[in-house]
Image (tube, helix red, strand yellow):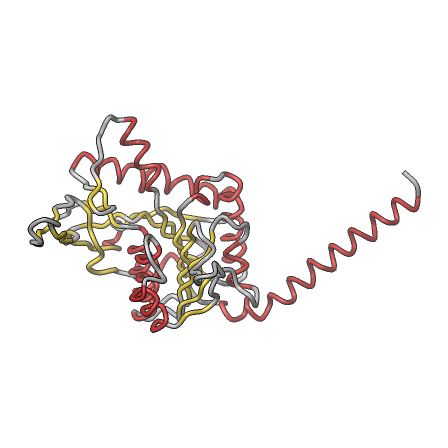
Length: 305
């Protein structure tokens, strides 16, 4: 290699170093904004199933914690639950998109969510140089739940009837004390969305719903909902970077927000109404999506505030 080639490579490297230093410097005001604050991250979707993205997510959490922000993770695991039920020969029935959860199914749900998935995330964070501890909503009565009540209307008779979804629950009360104690240390809590009922029953709770409830209970500065879409889009397919609660509600009413995005946006609205500083829907498949949202001016998704 010639001296000129070596010189060019050195110059290129120095340019990269300067760009990195400039990025870090630009991020300082945002780091200070979130210092000492709690950020609740709902982690799921394809990002959780991709080893490279999962490792990057773990490193980003460690960085966030090291600069003084307190991240709390609530994770999902629907696809993994489905695979395990299939392996065990347990047939799942879905009603209006919700899995009917009998006793056998809820045992598997708890095993997968509070067991294998939870510990994989914890291990990834620990391997990245952080300290994480896995919890479920049963630990310290973190998420006290009740049976989810849903109705459906018979298309022929037009009569409403109550759906029995088994051990599918919704948060009734969140006890933030255990999370506040852990977050005050150098440990990152990782929570599986399993709730405990009044008589000790185990309830399977939608991860989005659990994340919103926990975020409200702890007064999080931000709720970050990692999904498989870039955010809320307008009719032209452009990501809307910011929505007020009123605008989000209007888009749901008009049908501009539809399908699977409705419950996510509703969770964000409820979280903001419950005291969360702002809720963001962003694409978890984008590398460093959490860092981009928290520590850059343009953010990475749709902020509802």
